[in-house]
Image 1 (cartoon, helix red, strand yellow):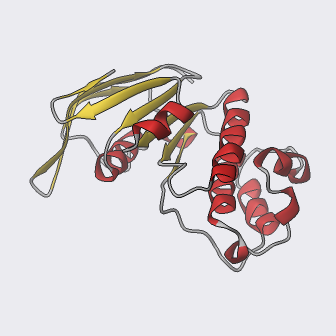
Image 2: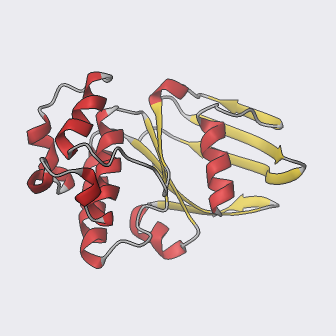
Amino acid sequence: MQTIQLSNIFKQQAHQTILKDFTLTIPAQSNIGIQMSHVEATTLFNLLRQTTPQTSGVMTGLTPARIQAIFHDDGFYPQLTVSTYLKTFQHISTFETDLDDILQYFALKDVAHTKIKHLSFDQQQRLALLRAFILQPDLLLIESPLTNLTNAGIELYLAALAYTREHGVTVLLTSYSLEELVLTSTTIFRYRQTRASS
């Protein structure tokens, strides 16, 4: 992907300022974390995917079709098995690798035929990551991926995230927890209403 640049982005919703003077450069294959609230993260993700317009400011280098987002409260189809669910997304992507070969890297091989409603929260978070990976984005946006995970779940998620990055996916994570960003990101920014600072 080409470098994405956001310059002096201002976003208001319902007469409330959500983002102000937001400037960020996202180089290809970078791994960026931003400390911000849920509302700010949702707004930023929607701006990057161009599902909502900015109030003012300039954004360049965006290809919305090549951007995927994982929100902390993403829903699933609970009656489907893991394998059936993933094959649904494989059909709408150009992903050709056999799912059986990829499940192990996301620590889901042993639950391939389990209904999603029976998965643990840890497993569901890795399933969301694998779903996004199958869609082969250039840029992956993830909100609070480690929140409420067990210690073992964090370890497995970080391994799956590393595998995702190794395959050329640029990752932008947001969380209110600085500790979470330290574990998941190589470059960290803190967003405040006045400016984003490193």
